Every structure is written in structure tokens, then in C-alpha cells.
Image (cartoon, rainbow, N blue to C red):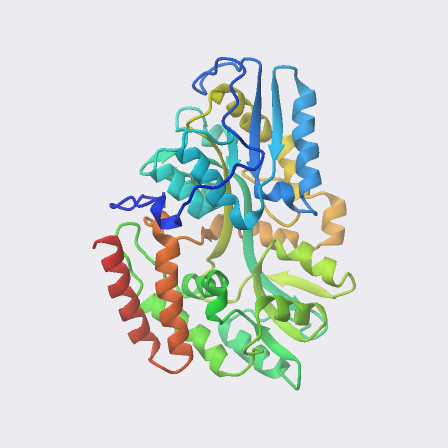
Length: 422
């Protein structure tokens, strides 16, 4: 369903924005008059900011793709700007809120929701024809806020079940099998499963429990009202707790530790997104691992969606739109997907023979794009960080035996309703 902004529209305050120093972004480019994104671009140099430009694995490929665009014509020049991931959203939103910032931005969903709800993004509804461009409907529906399109998918990274094929030759296909395999694989210092369960890793715990909630038919809201304590949400979280109580995970370890354990054959299964493929191979090129669909009752799972958007402050909206349209052409979509690795892009593409030989499981991840759900509370995207804190705190209290999961989510529902004014 399309994203809706919260009634209270506390988009920027929810992210606790503070004044920061611009990192190579300055203000929007202004070397000629601009346009409203609906005509032919005039000569201009524009800036494209993306945290992935600083990724040592994917950054050089993205820069090469931008340079390919620059070489394809002599009207628009795109300059890449990298801002470190931990401060990216705060930095760029602060600049945009002050009337400046890059012309083009690759946002993650919470920042996208915040920027759209605050009027910081250029509407694209009359400039992007989803049907003509063959945009994948599932992720594309989240590119609208309050019925208006503000972005196009740049990257969609789907969650699947990573498993060690030496420890687990046949992946489980049902939740019951998932539990059984986790138990039978656990022995000594080897564990059948790993997931985040520490308060210090709140964002990661949220990502992990998201798959359990969706996989058992739940969601955090219906788009208008919060549903944190619905039977389906509670059932998914009880499944998460069942595995925690079964002692099939390395309790007390953080994600960095248990991912090293997975890479060295000490963990059998993990639920993670496509971006984990590159990291896993880098940690141990010889690891015999594969990826399958998460074996929960519902084929619906979390997804890291990253839209590309145009800054409403930009004086070169036509130039920015020209780059987006170029990026959406079939040849560029294939190139972008090759750069991104195991992620999907805005339109259906065909993997190269070389990629499939290296990673035969890529089609499994690609097929999940349609059923992927961004890890926000739909309708309350800008307030997701605050709701996340409430939910994770209550869930972890249940894991620690302080309350049952139904009570935990009743408490979370009450606190979150007060937060959003329902």
C-alpha cells in the first residue's frame, strides 16, 4: 500500500535533526536557470548524494555508471557526493530543511518518508509512467506518500534465509522444519541459527523481528491505525521467542560476532538481505552457503528499499529527471544491478551468466522483490524510529521473561498510540 504521512507530521523532529556541517554537498547547483522537471534539461552540473558511493565494494561501480552518463551527452554533468552511512540521513535532511542540499539523493525509507512528509521532495507523479517503464509494482507502490509519487526505486534488497550447505544440505521449507533444523544443527559451539536480540542493536533487532511478523501474516499498522498487538503480530513474535527459548542461537553475541561465526561454519542459518552476500564472500570466499526463501507461513518478508529522489530545492529539476530517466533505461538497469550485486532494481532484469554461475541463488532473491515490505511502520514512516524503540524494548523484556508477548505488545500499542496521537 502507498505510504501515508502521520497526522502529526513530525517528520524531521522524529529524526532529531541538528545543524551539521555540509560534507562536499553545499547547496543545490545553480549555474543556470533550472526548470520544474517537466522539460528538456538545460546545461547544468548537479550533485547526486548516496551513502553507497562510499561503499568500498559498490562505490567505484556506481561512480563508473555516473561517469558513463556524463560521457553519453554534453548537457548535464552529475557529480557524485559520498556521505558516511551513519550520518547520511541526518546530514542531507538538515541541508534540505535549510533550503539547500544535493539535487539527487538516494534515501533509505525512513528518511524518504520524513522528507516527503515535510515537503522537501519534488513530486514526480506526472513525470514517471510506471506502466510504460515496467516498474516492479510491489516495491514501487511505496514510492508514494499521501497519493503522490516522490521517488523511484534505486535499489531493493530482499531478505532471504542464508544457510550453510555443509551443515544443512536441504533447507527447511516450513516453520516447523526451520525449528527442527535449528535444533538438530546446534551442538557444542555450533548453532543452528543466529539473530539479534540485544538492546544495544535496536535497529537490527527491529529488522530481524520484522520478518517474523510479516511471515506470520502480521504488520505494524493497516496504513491508518497501529496494529502492534494484533493476533498475527503476536504470533510472529512468539515464533521468534520460541527459537530464542530453544537455545539454538549464540545468546549474548552481537551481529558482528555471529556473522563471523556464520562465515567460519559455526552458525547454520541466518535471515538477512541480499547485501549480505558480498560481505559473506569477503569474510570467507570458500564458505559453501546458499539462500532460500524464508520458510514462514506467508511469503512476505522485509526489504531494504532505497528510492532515488529529486530535492524540491533543486534549481535543475529537469537535469535531475534526465539522469533518473537514463538510469531507468533497460541497459542501465542491468548495469546498475550488476553493480549492486544481489539487490534488485526498479524494473525486471535478467542476470548475466557470469553472475548466475557465481551465485546460483540470485533468482531466489530476485523473485522476492514483489513480496518485499520496507521496514517502516506504514502510515507512520517518519515516526518509525520512535515506534521501533518502543516495540523492541517491550519484545526484549518478553524474551527475558519479564512478561508474555501479548502483554508486551499491548504495552507497545498503548505507548505508540500516545506517541502518534491516536
